[in-house]
Amino acid sequence: MAFNYNSPAISNEALVDIEQIRENFLQLIKCHRGSAAPIIDSTHSAGMFWLYTPATGNWVLRQRNKDNNGWIDLWELTSSGVPAGHYAQSTATTTVHGARQGSGNGFDADKLDGKHLSDITGGGLITRNGLKTSTGSISGIGNNETYFQLQDYCFSPNIYADGEEVDIYLSCYYQYFDWSTTARFCLKPIYTPHVYLYGVVYQYITSSDKPFIYAIQKDGVILHVWECDDPPPGYWGLSEKPADFIPPISSSGINLEEAQEIVLFNYPMQNIKELRQRARGERKNFASLLRDYDYDHDKRLFIRKNLSQI
Image (cartoon, rainbow, N blue to C red; front, side):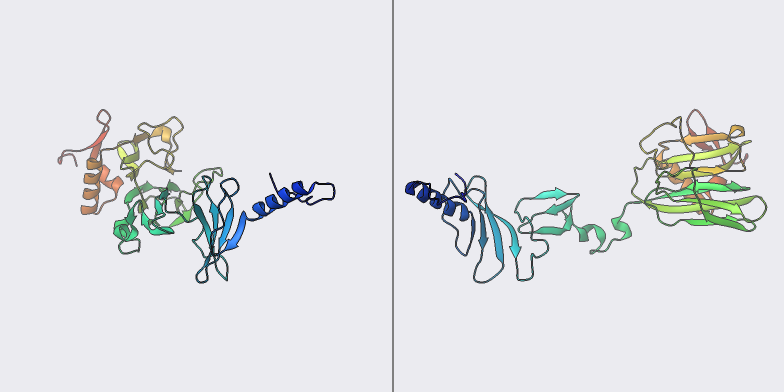
């Protein structure tokens, strides 16, 4: 039966009205208010509400569970409203984006994948040791506009140019709007085109640890190099250059049809670490360092020249 707004009625028999009045009371008790639980009737009380109103403390809105054998706390009420974090409280543990919810009566906001944030962030503050950071560099010889892009999630780069009056521009790397959030820059002589050396070094967050090298070589000389612990954005997870590959660096002074592109996915980590260590130790940028190496097409590696050749 259900709540009947038409009872009692003159046309009804007395017994029918009495039964309906009784049913109406049973329906009303399903929304109960008081400090004591309502009388439980297995036929009518599953799903009913109970606003628990103790003499002291917050009030709690509860609902009878489906099996009619317990109460579920929905939220707490105070004189000023519902306290933050008091919705749908449960003792169950649910993982949401790495955060652990539920240890007892609320939200355990100080844990990430079961670990206290202080264990990985140095006392609650994000530190360098709490982030997985990697590095990338771009370097070479320009004689006009040189365009390049960085990685996603990167910090502001260190950019230098050794030449007369070379400006740095934030640049639209592509010729169409694509909602890309990757940083793009342009180096350009202010007045007339002329030769300049340049270098870019930056850090970014996270890495697949699959180093990548893109180089432009002409007449046996390395002119531009883009190297990083990962391929450029959009090409992570690949092992070969795709047909529609868009270089992460380009120069208006070079015709790629007259030059050689070297695209190396999954470059051996140990090899690239040795190259970087040499570049830092000798205070060279990556492009100038690679001029001491020959590219072995079969091994897909840069092999250092004999000292007599350098």
